[in-house]
Each structure stands twice: as C-alpha cells, then as structure tokens.
Length: 116
Image 1 (cartoon, rainbow, N blue to C red):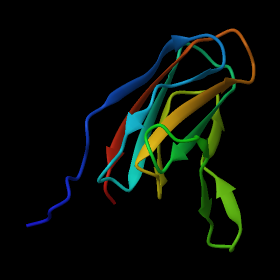
Image 2: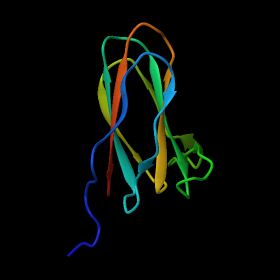
Image 3: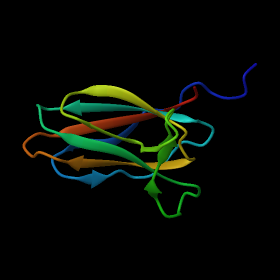
Image 4: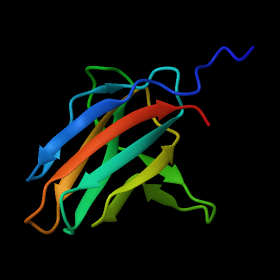
C-alpha cells in the first residue's frame, strides 16, 4: 500500500480578486506537485506563480524547476482564460502569487496538492 496520499484538500487561494495579490500559506507537506485552477471572469492577462519556503514561517521565494534543456524555469504561467495546470517539485509550504497584467477582469484561483 502506498503511504502517500494521491491528492490533498482543495484550497481557495484567491477569490474574485481584481488586483495583484499573494495567497495565504498553503500546506503541501507530503505532496510533490500542485494543481492550479484559474477561473477568469473574462479575457484579461494574469500571471500566476508559485513561491515556496522550506519552513512555514520562512522567507517565500519564487520556485524554479529544471527543464529538459538544462535551464531553470520559473513555476509561473501567464494566461487570459480559465485553465487547470500543474507544477511539479514544490516545497512543503507555498503561496500563489497572482499578478494582474491587464486590468478589467477578476480571477479566482484554487490549489490542490497532489503526488505524481
């Protein structure tokens, strides 16, 4: 039997925000990836990125992953439409930063830690 859970609880990181915001801490202990569900009220660019810390009350920094090309890539994604996406290789504690690139619409973001 696998001692790890496949999926964690769904957390509301941002609720209908209309300006750049950083979420509260999301506990991802025991998980190695995060599903992000971004829901838009209309087409407007937002950038969603993951910041992490090795301790709950530590300093949160942008998380980077090693791409197949050997370069480091930020766990960040810009979009203007509702999507679900996944980032692998997260720390135990994360925050979701939503940056409004083009104003005029709201954004709601849910996060769910998972194991891949």
